Image 1: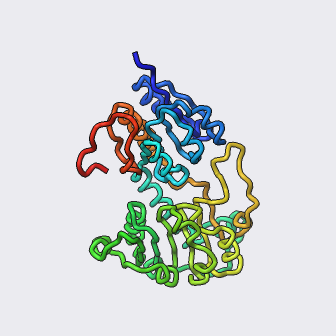
Image 2: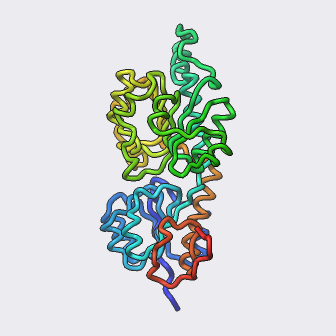
Image 3: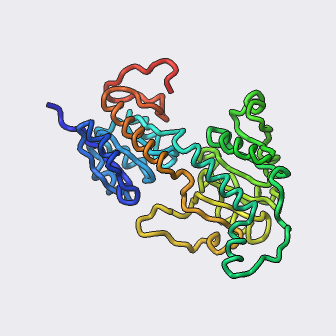
Length: 343
């Protein structure tokens, strides 16, 4: 009789497993190990002989993946995989799977919520009314959305969902993506533009591209200087797309008017004991902050846990999971041939 597979679930304290998630894995007869995974040593100690790893927000760095002896799949409960060394996993013959359409509607909704909050200055108005004061600003700074332009950097599923929502409010949409063709742009009702045009013309800038070496820090002081002084940055993509120190200076000096942020490069909002709020962004009035909540809904959470567990089940049964992000990997273990066209 073969031994029960070992499945390690990371981030189990900050984002605990649900009964349903445990049920999915119990159906495999798996022995589930629940840890947080705050350090490489903790992860490797638990995962060295694991058959599968489920991960939300922890890091799987090169030394950890190199030390895995039996792992067949790293299953991301979510979309981004920039915290996983995919190259090393591929060299080891380990499949990395994610859920690229996991939170499309939620992130698009949150993006529009932040955009609308900035457009209608809700943070300022809420603070004023709580003091029993009717703001004396008149209509300055308020604009009909149908007269405004939004620039979307990255036109994947989330970018397209944000564009549809913006169009419903009458916003003109500029989009930049190396895969965006004139035919696709025409069907989506957007205008293709290069980055400099988007920076110069956007009233609202939404970076929604993947975090890659080429996009890390892509919005820094040179880019902020090209933007309108009335422009708003709405970031629900990846915090590391923006140089946050430069952003704080740009906001303080009035290079841009406002920022609405749900993601952060220098702040770990998932830290067990809380996180420091010493960065200058926390002290600026012209910043609206939410704690990486853009992907959150009961429906998305339940769906992601189920599909991530299913990816583990498929792989351990010798089948390809739904969305391998390293499709050229040569698994070290027996697995069925992939169907033609399977992503």
